[in-house]
Length: 343
Image 1 (cartoon, rainbow, N blue to C red):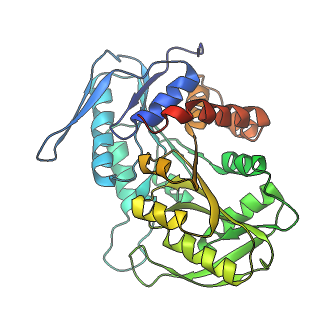
Image 2 (cartoon, rainbow, N blue to C red):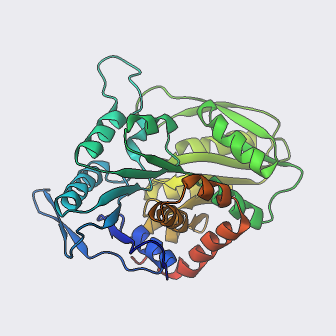
Image 3 (cartoon, rainbow, N blue to C red):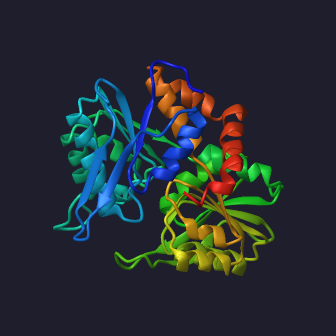
């Protein structure tokens, strides 16, 4: 049971309920009493069923599979908390889909992430917590404090515990844009890097991997990325690696935004398994043996505890790579495996 500075009040949006429950399990607290209704014409209604006057509250809502509805609901929650005289409101957004829209890279388009940031601040948010933004510079769109967490320590620890790394283990980036992320993972695992040369012809979810840059012949490879929607690039990279003579293939994603069709692509692909986190609920993943889910909820819960105690977040980042916190995070996942998909 958490006994720090005051009671932590965690609430959840419609698609953040299961993740928030896992955070509360870690903290030994109860999920706040609130409800969301969606009417037949599409309108969303939110209501807090208890007093939150002068309390610091945390609202959990990923912006993932239903980004427009989820984002609108998040705005309503923040507004409701502020109108109910909350002392502060922290938005916990485990996955932020609109982080892809970080720039005006062609004429007459919106910088969507900036619009979202402005809206979140206008309704009165006091702080925001993300994990593995597709474009980290999105943090700069906010005037309020932003805490950016990383899935890398959890994913790397999971890979270590699978006993699949040897002297011929290579970390692979599916494209040049993910090369920095792959390099960071490779540095943590003390392994070399290879890069896929990918080209995208439009704004759809289809891209083509042209070649693999780096030595992968006879090596076991870990493909890393922040998210996948169609799994097209992941499977394309796998085929390219096999064509270059790679041995066993694995994949690690920070977020799982794949639908059933994409999950089946992974199941039918050369990958031994794909590991990802639970930042976006995906009940369908339970039906596919190659999909492994680990919980990022303890990491977010630890961040909430740190913020609530008015402690510097830097101390959390210093300790995040410690075996103790990683053990707690992975053990929490193991304890919750049986209910992970029933929420």
